[in-house]
Structure formats: C-alpha cells, structure tokens
Image (cartoon, rainbow, N blue to C red; front, side, top):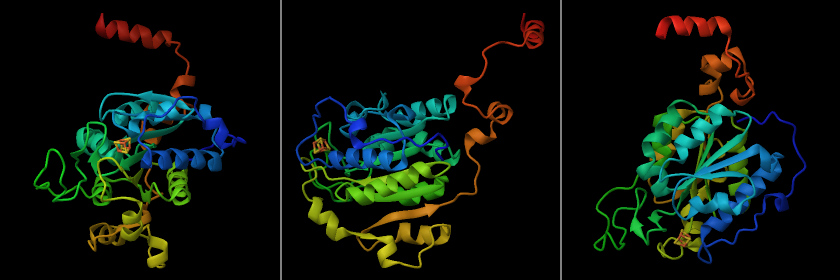
Length: 300
Ligand code: SF4
C-alpha cells in the first residue's frame, strides 16, 4: 500500500518484543525479522499502523517476536485473514508472512486469488525450501533430488517457480531477496510496502538445521543482483520478467523482478469504498430507516 498516514519517527527499538524466540541459532528468520523492522523504520510506519498475519511454521512465529499488531492463524490461511483484515481497515499496512510450505503448499489457492485481485497487501514468503517446524520434509519449492526424511532417495517432483507463478497469477510487484543480506532484504520489503497493490517478496532463507547444503556461502555463490548484472533490465516489462523468471542457470536473481503501477487495487473497485474511501471501520453503523423498511418488505 502507499502509506498516506503521517510518517512517524520510529526506531528499531519500537518494534522489539520481549518474547524470546525459539528459532535455531543461525536461522535465516532472524535476518528476515530484522529486515522487516528496518523496512518499517525506513518507511516511517509506527507499530500501531502495521498488522502482520501469519500461518503455521517456524517463520510464522514472527508476529510473536515483533511489536506490531499480530495474528497467527491456521496453516496457509494468513492470506485469507490478511485479505479480510485489509478490506476492513485499509489504513493498516498489512503484511502476510509464511514459509514456503505455508504459502506455496496449503495456502497456495488463497495466495493466487490475492494476486489476481490485486489485493493491497505484502506477502513475504520465507523460502528455505524445506518444512522446518515438522522436522525437515521436502516442500513445494524443494529442488528435484533433495534428500529428506520423506524423500530419502531424493524428491521426484520439480519445485514451484515462485516468480513465474506470481507473474502468471497477476501479482503487480514481485521482488526477491536473501535473509543473509539484511540491507537488500529491507530495501525490497520497503519497496513492496510502498507499492500500491499486491506485492510478493520471495525471501530466500537459510535453515541450518534441515537444509544444510543451502547455507549462507552457498546462497552468496548462487545469487546475483539484477541491477548489477543487467543494468538495462526493465521491471515494467512482463516479457523480460518472464524470460528472467524462466531462465535456469542454477542461480537466483535478486531484486525487483516486476512492477506494474497501473492496475487498480481490489478495494478501490468495490462499491463500499467507491462511495466512501475511509476504512470500513470508520463508516457509520447506523442503518438508514428507508433501507431498513425496504429490507423488511423484501424478506419479512
Ligand atoms: Fe529456522 Fe530451520 Fe530451525 Fe526452523 S528448523 S527455526 S527454519 S533453522
């Protein structure tokens, strides 16, 4: 969303929670949480102006560890609750957060519909290519051949391509970053927050407990920044974006893959907001007596 409320002077301290984290030492979730806090500080958004909704998973514990409005819901349902909360109160910066299993597994249907509707929310996928909380099964983004407890001979399925999926489903902002590069991660999250419309951030993440191969050094050698290697890349061009998303040289491009500022958001198009653009929670609950009589005549 484009934050129209007055910018507030906030510091990282304002977002710190007193809850002790249960993440494993070295988990990429720490980097993601720091990046979210930095992005909020840099955007001048205060804790009470933010709602973070998550599902189930290691990274989905994040609302517990950050001092903003938070809601942990059912597995994969962060997208639905986040969408409903945003429609009720469009003045909140709504961030949906979940792992690759939560987002691209059980929650994939909800996520796709938020994309095609251009729901004005940010969805950060903490993508470590493994189910961490349930002890290391292969996930929808795991690479073919990835050996885990449920794929001892190597996964036989091909992993989902998050960038191509988001492009084809109509996401109007698609970014990718890495938990081990907090400055870059914070910048991509901030750009996602400032985008008007649906924004997905595919946040590559280390899981030192169950994905030992893809450690920090591995990601550093297997990623590149789009703006450094392709100075002429135009994120507004969907054809270039599809080409980049489908390129398979084994490395992950980082940066803003796609951005379309021209599509109206879902809330801008629904009658209730066309009549009164204030958040629904500020609308009067008083029922117009004439309207009430007409309802009675119709239904009673
Ligand atoms: Fe992080 Fe993996 Fe530990 Fe979960 S299992 S807390 S993702 S390191």
